[in-house]
Length: 181
Image (cartoon, rainbow, N blue to C red; front, top):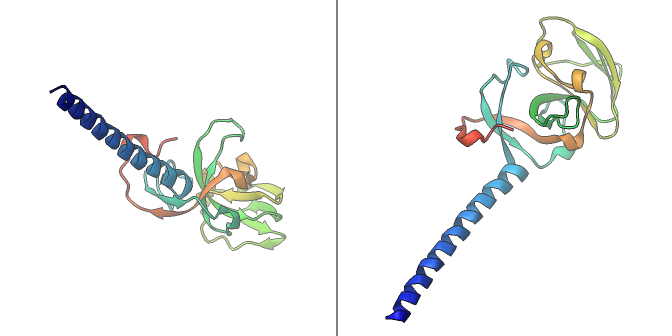
């Protein structure tokens, strides 16, 4: 009789351990995918209008950020810049490492040549600015140039602060603040 009780206890304990292991693997897999493969993105504000609007959700890829291209959308971790708070912003790559960027009015010049800006919208002229990018720096702007905190405010973004690239709109439920930082 006593051995049956022990077997039953062992069976219950084994089931609990299997459940813990199962859920640990699931949670671990989700965290690995979220941090190293794809990152869910929640757009806040109007800095990327008309491309992306406040409240839109989507996915962004984490790997491959060493080979970013001009006009690519990126997700940037702003900790270490200006206010020191950690939050993520979505912007568009304009200037690549080693380039010279000049802003004047509604025009952008890259290495002295006028850049054909296909995404930028303006309500007013931009303040004049000239920046020489380092070997690991990118100049990024919001598409809504008149309402964006971007490289004009923060300065060039270092590659290690770019946490993901690309943005594919995809309606995602906001489960327990999954998108909040």
